[in-house]
View 1: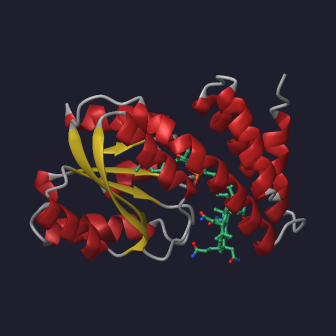
View 2 (view 1 turned 90 degrees about the horizontal axis):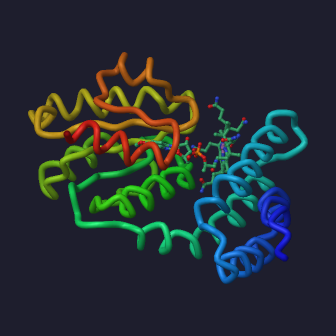
Length: 210
Ligand code: B1M
């Protein structure tokens, strides 16, 4: 019997080796990969955030927890992707300019790939012109933006404006998400879709493409 709380605690304490070992054991025992992410790893990261807010954790602890989460996700990601079907669209995905958070963005990418989309991962700190270039040169049908900071949310609006100025806004759908983003904000900036979770991003992509 695997104690899955160990995975939660490994992410919380930044123990990458422990996170990897428990994830390996859990996957070998046939536990559903998404359950590991949603029920253990994400709550641990939420607690990391709470400790950061209350000054019990500082940036080094955030980095260690992020590394532990990423180590476990490296094992899980291929399994999320493998559940997919035929390619149904091409998504240019990135964390917006000024923002270096990529764990959620990577999960969204894995879920979209699992949902049958081809994902062009532009990485983090992606300037508007790079999203525009992905639409023009790589013929993305969806621009998917992630932001984790209230200070970087406005880069989503700037990117939509850049798509308009480049004359390509009509040929793409824009999806937005990330902890500080809401449906209200998505509507305000003229995005076509919003999701609060990685799994929901697939449904949102399907909705906007329909
Ligand atoms: Co940062 N950070 N961080 N951080 N960090 C937050 C976001 C923060 C809320 C912590 C806090 O104060 N409680 C806070 C932001 C406050 C605010 O803006 N109001 C914060 C801060 C302040 C900062 C710095 C400024 C700290 C500093 O240097 N003083 C700095 C900024 C650096 C920068 O980006 N320029 C910073 C740095 C970092 C690290 C680099 C140390 C590290 C990131 C490592 C990495 O990503 N490689 C880090 C971390 C780990 C966090 C927390 C603790 C965890 C983020 C995370 O990975 N969550 C975070 C606190 C928190 O979120 N509770 C925090 C797990 C992940 C699976 O969830 O990313 O929300 P999330 O993604 C979800 C959904 O949001 C959604 O799906 C995902 C899965 O369901 N989603 C989408 C995301 N994108 C989507 C796109 C979609 C659809 C859904 O469609 C396209």
